[in-house]
Figure 1 (tube, rainbow over the protein chains, first blue to last red):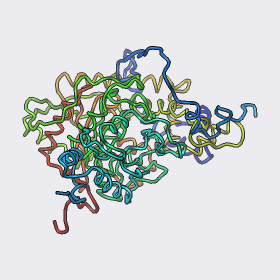
Figure 2: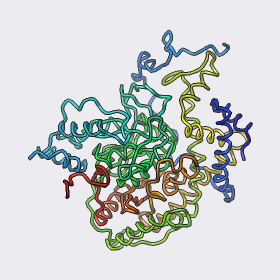
Figure 3: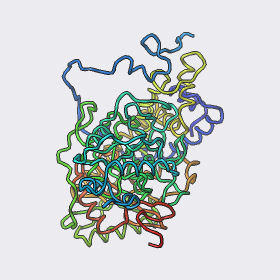
Length: 94
Length: 488
């Protein structure tokens, strides 16, 4: 069972704001999903290598040559607050 | 000479392309027929419909101008592409997904963008802020998800064919629930560039079509390495259009772990599977039991790994570079309020689950263990493919369920993916084909093969499809099919 303060801790890590009602519901729902997930705790996996990726590819590189890329204007076209050729954000100290 | 519009709607994509090439059908008229149908969509399948067709279509192009419905998860330059999330409302990407570029270049113009579960997270298409999608076979039921709009559109004859994406079953399961063919290709065989990311080690684009030939035809024009996706690879074989009618010498394996009532598979689904197995034997194929000992743990491993990857992928939605912004003046509230108002419940749930599984103190118990289960599942498949050529299972444990039936219980919704996630974890290709009806609703048969065995998969699927003779024509309303006149 996940406790309320654990939910709040994880929500802070994920930069999610949850309402009081959402916190309780999340605790309940995550607990039920985690109960199911915990079945993999029964398996003996001591000598098993982890798989992060289904395709055995490593360090795919390309030659380091300059190529055209998105222009500044196009990169900023979808920004909520384009500012002086950059992305406008509130001051972290504000 | 000119094919009447209701008959046009009964044509598969490949047949329509043939008629265009033969001069019996005009590509621009075909586009207009489908555009009118897509605009009259009352299933909630489309989020937007292209305003006009292609200026001129090269009828010699392989896809001859047959229009394509595209899941809203694919970026199309200048066209709203939101992955059905409020957080991307109004976003018009500055570039187009490679797979869309390739299909358009092959002669399939975009008909419109289709509805989906937000960020592809869901198995019913009910997690869309733009409304649920209805299943044309029974409008009170879900079309499956997350590519529910792409499936409903093809099943209702609002589009001749479509593309979706499959992370844990999101092409195969909606195809199954709507009586269609859905192919989840080998991981890496199709570029993910321009596909809005959910879980990057799983996500693959795939076709949703009326028959296996159409799936092969679209897939042929989707595959191949793309310098913009470092995980993409060239397919070792050219993709052939399947022509096989017999299955002599082909060995099929049925894993009891994914095909038993004790594992939660509906009896009606298992009956259809049994009949399909008899057809396979009639065609000369051999069928034996093979064990996938860890497959029953696939769902648990998947629901750790995919949310973990999602929690990292979705960190980019912070209200700074694109999409919606909310907040009250300081940076922390900008992030938190943007994400609070922009993400729906299921997306928040998965971000929370993934963040929890990756957080200090839980990483080894959840993420680490799930990665090891992933290895075991891939090993199970490798061992099975020593003995058989293809694996056969149901695609979905149940037929299409009622709208609202599972929304209150996330775990019961996740169980919809029980038969499809093992293949996703192993990165191997799998196809769902309609195998019959249970209670008047379509049941999908899933075939899976080793990595890059799409040709083998498509050949077998085509032979089984012919033997079953499922009517892959669109359902117009109340179970009536296109091309059926009054009293037909």
